[in-house]
Length: 167
Image (cartoon, rainbow, N blue to C red):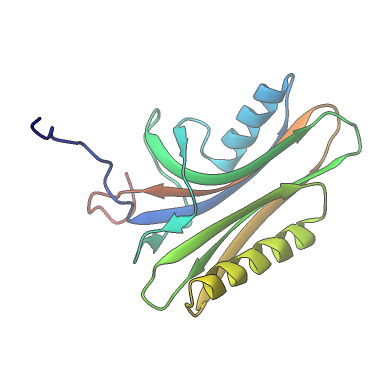
């Protein structure tokens, strides 16, 4: 049987860390509102595992066309108990050659505790790979539920097509 031509997504060349927290009328609306606050609510997130391509460039902002299919590693949690604390965190660890590992965490603790957990996971991931951890970037978001809320922390990946990280 002849091999068929296979189309693959371009390997991402840029990444950004995005966080958001919001209330909503339903759990899904709260999650959607948190995505909007994070700046990634008008794209289609394609959940990926935890590898950052070598030499992917860090960008402060996400500028993607509406409806784009966007590889994303993310953590999210929602809650409906007033006073409950929600937290989500993501981190990127980089090796010497720019190859990276992404770790995510969500739970009911403080931002500081979540960031510490992500940092510990990054160190463990690099130790397991026998690679030196050269640099880390971690972002988190914390929210106290008023009625029904969600938080999201994401590492968004995209191919810039040679235009400096902007789509």
